[in-house]
Image 1 (spheres, rainbow, N blue to C red):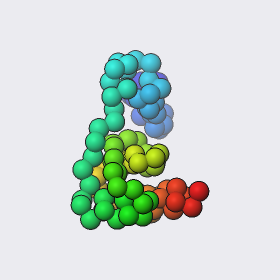
Image 2 (image 1 turned 90 degrees about the vertical axis):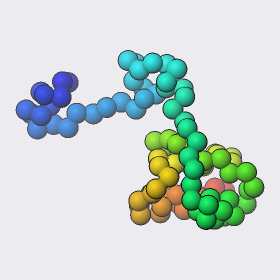
Image 3 (image 1 turned 135 degrees about the vertical axis):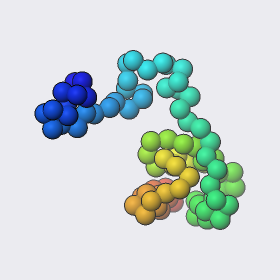
Length: 95
């Protein structure tokens, strides 16, 4: 739906995530992960919590932890995102 039509009808237009967008360039979809630089103290705390030495932090749409790769939406997190981050870490450690 065109954004103008959505606005007239009072609807919020939705956008597909980049990986589902058929109009997006396939190379740009695969290279969307970019390394993030966290504050030193936060990176140390996360690495200590999950007990790894080489933590890799990447930019992504959601917060996830797979092996030693942590995906975060931004280097500055909101309160809700911090809570979600520690839940993800807790589930990774307790699994």
